[in-house]
Image (cartoon, rainbow, N blue to C red; front, side):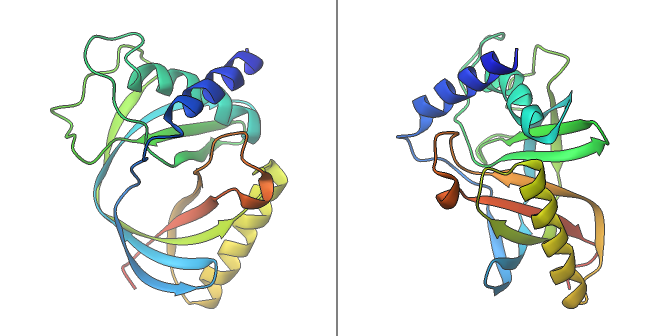
Length: 191
């Protein structure tokens, strides 16, 4: 199943690789190398929750989300691929994987997911601390990036809320040293 999900994600990303990919809008509040504070506009996210390890869950969760945006199990138009694919721990062995919907859509204009495994969530405007990192985003890479982010947040005197969210921007065949990955955490106030 995991091999099939990886193949599916590779094919879907390959189909979208030549087209420009929309990213969520934000305003840069501050920047210090790989560490940034960003204010994001409201967004809608299609999400699914899957079990397993951090790396494999990303590929497992991609399938149902790709089926939704590419209208595999529903009527209506396809939805353009966006970046990044996000991943957030929900328990010690479960992860929520998400795609941000293009800004042109609202909750009223998005087609309803057919699968009960996919939900649409309206996220309000929010401010986050972000750390950019490269690599395959293995569990070790993710843990190290999270630890570095939290050190920078503490040094900056920022107050966080919630759990970190990981963001992955590149297709699977991108060389590890040029991959664009991020870990972000919501801030309790706009600071």
